[in-house]
Structure formats: C-alpha cells, structure tokens
Amino acid sequence: MRLVAEKLSGERGGETIFSDLDFVIAMGGALLVTGPNGAGKSTLLRIIAGLLAPASGDVRLEDSGSFPDLQSACHYLGHQNAMKPALSVRENLAFWQAFNGEPRKDIDEALETVGLDGIDHLPFGYLSTGQKRRIAIAKLLVSHRPVWLLDEPTAGLDKVSEGRFAGLMQGHLAEGGIVIAATHLPLGLEGAQELRMEGRG
Ligand SMILES: Nc1ncnc2c1ncn2[C@@H]1O[C@H](COP(=O)(O)OP(=O)(O)OP(=O)(O)O)[C@@H](O)[C@H]1O
Image 1 (cartoon, rainbow, N blue to C red):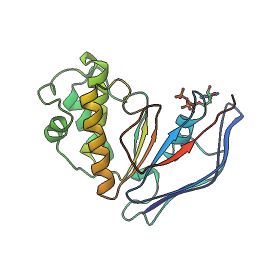
Image 2: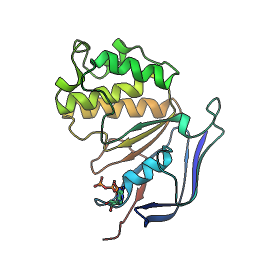
Image 3: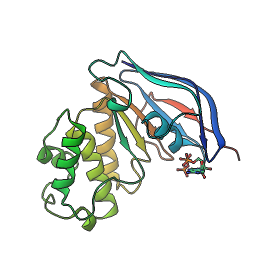
C-alpha cells in the first residue's frame, strides 16, 4: 500500500491555496504537514479524505488491498470531533463503528486505551475539551482504516494523553498504517517526512 500525490493543487473560494504538491508515503510512513495559519494544511487533509475536490492533480492509494479507494481507507480526525453532544460516549462510538465498518477494538477496550473507561454513559457534550478529543481518538480504534488523517490531533490534550496518543500512532505505523498529520506541535513521530506549506504570507 502506498499513498501517492501528484501535482496536487487546492483552492478555496476560487483562490489557489497550494499547487503542484508531490509526495509518496509508503506503508508504515508518516507525513507531518506544517506551516503558518491559513497555509492550507486542513484544505490538504480534506482533499486527501475526499471531502473536497482537488483543483487539479491527483491523490490516490496504490495497492490498496480490500479498500476500493482512498476515501474508504481513511479515518479523518478534523478540528471538530464529529460527535453528537446529546448522545452518550458509547452511542457515539457505536454509531461510528457501524458507519465505518471493519470493527477493530470493541468500545470498552478503545475507551480503556484512551484512559476514559467509566464515562461511557455520559452525554458527549458533558465532557471536557481534552476528554472530547480523546473520545474522537477512540473512534480511530473501533474501526480499522489504514490511513489516519489527523488535523491538530493533540490540541487540548494533557501531557499524559499526548504521550499515549504518540504510542497509538507508533503502533498504527508499526502495523503498516499511514499517518498524515497537520500540526503546530511535536507529535513524537521520529523519522516522519515533513511537508512545509508556506502559505501566501
Ligand atoms: N470555504 C472557504 N472559502 C474561502 N476560503 C476558505 C474557505 N475555507 C478556508 N479558506 C481559506 O483557505 C486558506 C487555507 O485554510 P486552511 O484551513 O486549509 O489552513 P490551515 O493551514 O489548516 O490553517 P490553521 O493552521 O489555522 O489551521 C485560508 O486562507 C482560509 O481562510
């Protein structure tokens, strides 16, 4: 499996945000996308996830095994956590597991892994900012998708949770997964490629 971007360009509101990006990420590889606010990091992740169309160029998954296309192989963790505030933690994770398919960890195990077992019955909306992020991370664990697209994944996490999440990403890479993360913070992924987006100043 290999994620390939060729001459990839993105635009927002009719303006070109970035153009002609080329990169290849092999199984077990990570790409850190860095750069100032507004440089286009989130736009790039959304294009890879299939949530926005590229302005030109192509991004694809080669040798994708049982996944028919790149979009179906991606977990997308955006700035928003994509959980319903009135549903319980367990109901939210059960929804995502059914929606994404390919069950991996069960919900109790995923909650234990992010250190939040015991709050499964609470409405998601009651949780603290960092707890919400950790539940969104648990979503990555309840279904198997080989490509993790992470937008500022550690924003709002305390040090212990940051370290735990670094371990989860390393485990995912060790199993042959791919990680692409937009970040302003070090993520503990030694050996990752870096794509520096400069923005328009
Ligand atoms: N729907 C939209 N219409 C027009 N412009 C947009 C739209 N969404 C984003 N933009 C612009 O596109 C540019 C890139 O935004 P993007 O969110 O990709 O940047 P980023 O690198 O992720 O920034 P940050 O570090 O602040 O998260 C910004 O100038 C932003 O204002």
